[in-house]
Image (cartoon, rainbow, N blue to C red; front, top):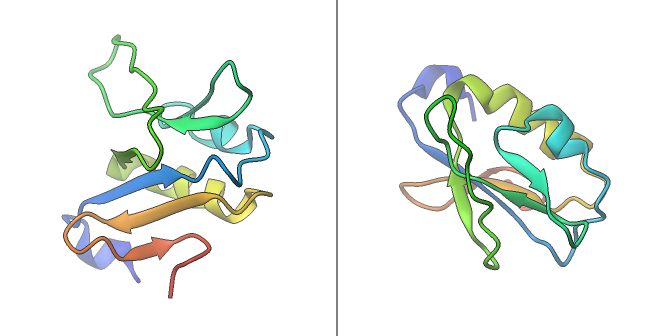
Length: 103
């Protein structure tokens, strides 16, 4: 998939905590999108206006929209995640475009 050709396409990201190793690589690449919780696992957080703090989405399968300016950081997180637990999918049809289940 080439995101640059379809910039208006909305994407969302979610993490399978059952596979998360807690390395924190995702939070290093995109701290606006990922954060480690007290349990040592990574979770996603939704976009918020500058200066506001986002709440972690801790329910299993919870997804957050991927802001276009952060897409490269999020996809690098997917590639480097040792647990292969980060999934990015199109909102419209829920097809995974980056991650272990991407076609």
